[in-house]
Image 1 (cartoon, rainbow over the protein chains, first blue to last red):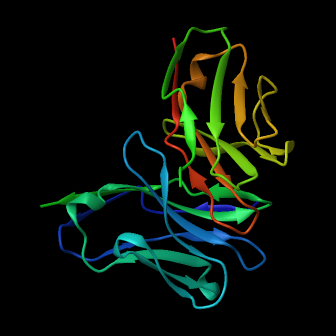
Image 2 (spheres, rainbow over the protein chains, first blue to last red):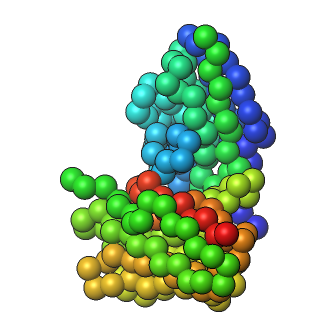
Length: 111
Length: 112
């Protein structure tokens, strides 16, 4: 079965520090990959997506992600975290016309 | 352009009752997805509608059902509510496969 793994349930970083959230997937073909962010009690907002082409993709709010086929990974990065980035982040892969989500990573930002 | 809208925002029902949740997709989007986000269980795929037809459903009992209307809006019905149905129900829409899906703000269903 296709799956998405986000190994870190919680991550805490200091404001201004860099951030990397990990995502690994299992999928036979070239996947469509997504990162979403969710603030408490809210819906999901798309941060960025990868369909094909350049393996480094830029998203909103200063986020970027790199697709590495050899590692089946699609890690999310941000060079300098702001307090407003505190939220839950979900990696997703499209499979069979639906999105399969990872369990999410809760990001806490300390000042 | 209006985003995906869901109603109601909050819904409180008693066990055994029925709940109806509604979703209006972004204009031009024909596909609607429903997800359940229960505490500790992540985002679970419920249903996918496209062009008025149910195309796929997740591993949920038949008391979870829905439909898509000719204007592509959708409703999710949950019959014989159980306490564990309490969750945030998210609707998403998109133009077609291989394009990004946009989510609504969700309906918080509480079963007491």
